[in-house]
Amino acid sequence: MADRPRSVLFAINSPFSTRDYVSEPLFENLVETVRAHGLVPVFSSYESAIADFVNENGAEFEPLALRGDGFVRKQLWKVKNSVLHRAVRYRHNEVNQFAHQERFKRITSAWGRSEHAAIRPHDIWPRYLGFPFPGNRRLLRLLTSAMGSGVFNHSKAIQRTFWERRPVLLLTAMVQQPISFSYIHHARKTGVPAVGIVGSWDHLTKEGPIPQPVKECWV
Image (cartoon, rainbow, N blue to C red; front, side, top):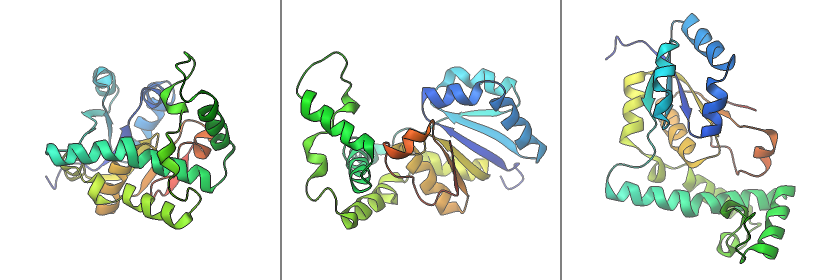
């Protein structure tokens, strides 16, 4: 395994980032740049439909590891996604007094118990997310630390990917999403620098904290 070429690992975890990655000329430029440095571009995504396209254009594809291994890991994954991530996101936005936070709170207050067709579940803040002390920075740091910890993010599948692919750099799209915390956790453990990518500037003020340590963040 030691003779296997080093790689740059792209973790693509949403249809939006898949679309952006494989649209010209971004995809081709990324692949060419990585290969010019003697590295293998590896695209990890749950959208297996792009596998042939990725392979035909000089990169390698492997499935994105979405859930944990075994019963306990799957339960921890559910807790991280359904409760912890939303609580951290709420508190991060509340502490920083982002304008989007006030908008979501107004929507929740006015429409939270309705079944209006225009209301999406992620537009509504469940009341428990800010309980207790929604503006407490120390509690936010504690919850954010838990969000990025190995307790919630260790994955045998991702660990194997880092061992087999030997990345020198991780780029993860939609960096504030729970799966990115898992990839960045394993990057941190193996000393691989991580770059986060967000779809637009407003994501930085409504989607929650950036996992640490992210070396750079691209918009």
